[in-house]
Amino acid sequence: MKISSLAFMDTKPIPSEYAYKTGNSSPPLQIDNVPEDTVSLALIVHDPDAPSTDFTHWVFWNLLPDSTTIGKEEVPAEVVEGQNDFGNNHWDGPAPPSGTHRYVFSLYALDTLLDLPLEASRYELEEAMEDHIIDTAELVGTYTAK
Image (tube, rainbow, N blue to C red):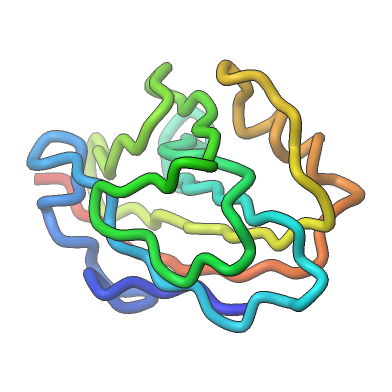
């Protein structure tokens, strides 16, 4: 399985239009080679370089397994967006206080649909996925504080 973006290459800078303070648009994503037995997909975007905690920027689940693209600022109708560490149920982009941070887009192929409440956090999603992960893929972007 693979996740990529037309907006930035793996390990390269994320453009400012996707950053929290300068556009806050969710980036377009491309999904390829999803295993045949996948029932749903889930995504976690987080900043492992945040000063106090591994900061979550976006979580969602129940994306259909035949989804191959998610457009800029697009959330498919079936997707449930959980709560990020800003306290919102949507994408909130990079906002490092200083230096350059990594933003990890982790995609999960699952053998089930998940029944979680809207206020579910990344950690509740990870717990619900625990015994249901078929495959994973990762895309990393960077962003430098302005």
